[in-house]
Image (cartoon, rainbow, N blue to C red; front, side, top):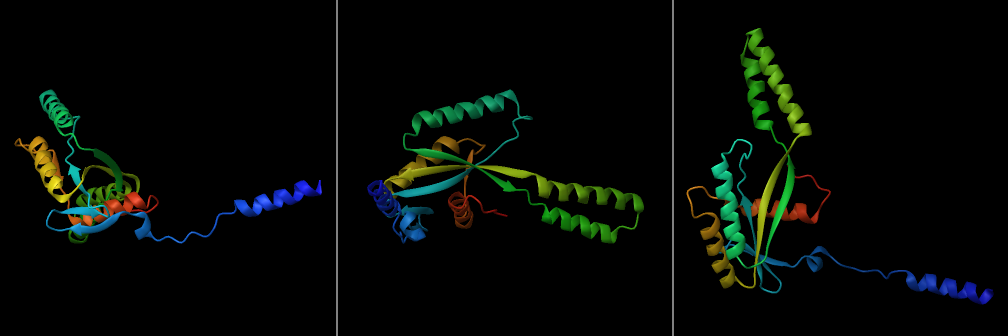
Length: 191
């Protein structure tokens, strides 16, 4: 019996993980942001970039518009061979500018009927900000190097933005950073 107890203690000591010292730069493969191509270059010289998918109100769109969008995305999926990833993120609804405008109007207006409706509108905006979220869609593309990235970006623009109604748009560096921050920090709230 004593022998088995000593082996259990030995196993418990060997199962404890050693101290691992890592920092974020060891875990994330980003090397730098290439300003000439507006993309991130990774440690292995491959590139990634984010684009925002322009959303539409499908409930009020005509059947022809919906069909055209489906056909354009089907053509994109057939012709664009490199890997892509579609990212969907929820952001809190920001109504601060509208609330500031209504507060300003409340200070200026003297008519009690107008003030009543402005007060209702202000409460609705406050409710929306605390309970609603805005959903945004992003397209993430990958390339093996910068020259291949430029070709893929041209193909992407040709397939999705060739008509009068574009389907994607470029994103600023700051917004890309906030998206990547949110993807790597799931518990954070981005305003």
